[in-house]
Length: 271
Ligand code: 1HE
Image (cartoon, rainbow, N blue to C red):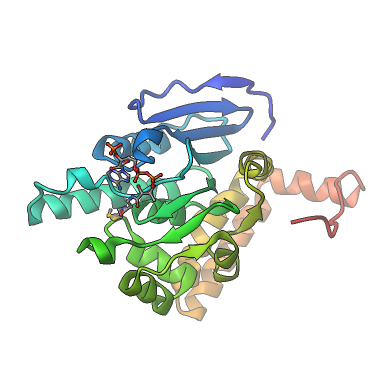
């Protein structure tokens, strides 16, 4: 995808707790409630769903960042007091819907993490495809100590990233992991110094936006499903997906570029 879209605001109506802008083919969604440590209230969750559903054509990746000292303090606990069971289920299902528009949406999402990435904030980060963590970032699931349980898809996504046993430990004991520890566990995809997350995230998102759209579709939508299938079904779906991607004009052009020595070679490069 060409980087010819310029920069500026994206024309999507969002609550004051979110801000959207565009840099070339990358849309940037900013959690903008720093006075509440980017705690996620209903309005913000609905805004996240709106943003990812309404992404315009020409956007090839999203960068998700948090304003202030923390990525997100998770669920806005002040909204919890009055909820009965029925409302609680509806609330959790709202989060599921919203975060599904991230994980299984139109384009890959890179999250830039710093400070607290806790509770629902960690569930939000887990829905992204790539996580760039600054050294200040830390991960926790304080639901255990608040007398509640994850409700934003954490039980589904986090065990796939870090394993059931680690998630149990985080919830039962309140254990916190640093950005460095998160790297060994699969939470931190890239570890960077404090203040460097945005630039690294933007660089990665721009690179992702430059991939063939069918490749990004396959990685987002086919790969995680294939990984859940029995191997025989997985091989069959993989064969279909790879043949579809290969047959696309974009793949043919890229392969021709390589064979005619116009495409860059794979280099060791920094990660
Ligand atoms: C909040 C929230 C919140 C801050 N809901 N208002 N999440 C938690 O259990 C984490 C709770 N938050 C904290 O532990 C700390 O706030 C932080 C470590 C994230 C940041 O500490 P700090 O010292 O920078 O800020 P602060 O002074 O604690 O908070 C500033 C303000 O934000 C303060 O409000 P104020 O009106 O007194 O200024 C806080 O009350 C407010 N605030 N976090 C509401 N989470 C789908 S289910 C998901 C379930 C969960 O996510 S449970 C985990 C919830």
